[in-house]
Amino acid sequence: MYANWASDPEVTRFLTWPAHSSVDVTKALLTDWIPRYEDGGYFNWAMEYKNTGKVIGNISVVKLIESIDAAEMGYCMSRAYWGQGLMPEALRTVMDYLFDVVGLNRVAACHDANNPKSGRVMEKAGMKLEGILRAAGKNNLGICDDVWHAMIRSDRKK
Figure 1 (cartoon, helix red, strand yellow):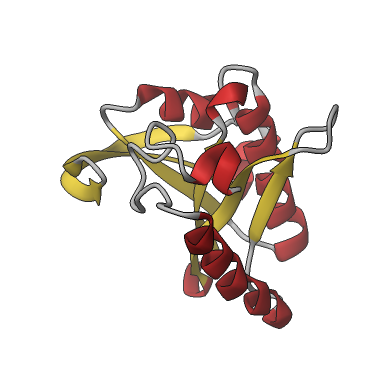
Figure 2: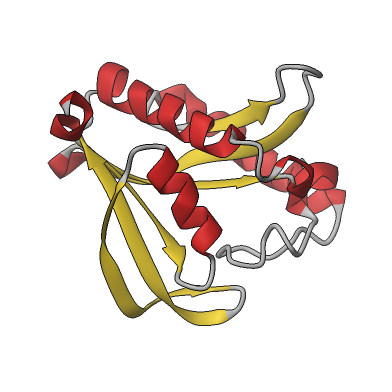
């Protein structure tokens, strides 16, 4: 994780957490994540490149809103694998799991308006553009406009 994406400032440029400054930061994060899986309501996956078995990124539910059966997603991946269609595939797979196994009705994600490639990932995964919330987000570059995309269960049948 540290070597493949978490320490890369280009990967974390539009994210809400800074590039990891050392492998110890990554180890501490992973140590924090592991016990969360025990309750069954924590959804955070490593992405493995099929051809090599190498872990190249992660995708997770960053906010679960149980009262409306909804989730907000986050994802990141090693730059070496950008542009190969891997993240849309991962996002589609995770959305299928969240709809079919977890029973959610809505899966959403947002990106900085200055990062349209992330929006393209969402569109390729089948999410619909919902709108832009001006100056509603903050990432490593500062205050930003959040562009929201989502899929609801009924969108899948169309």
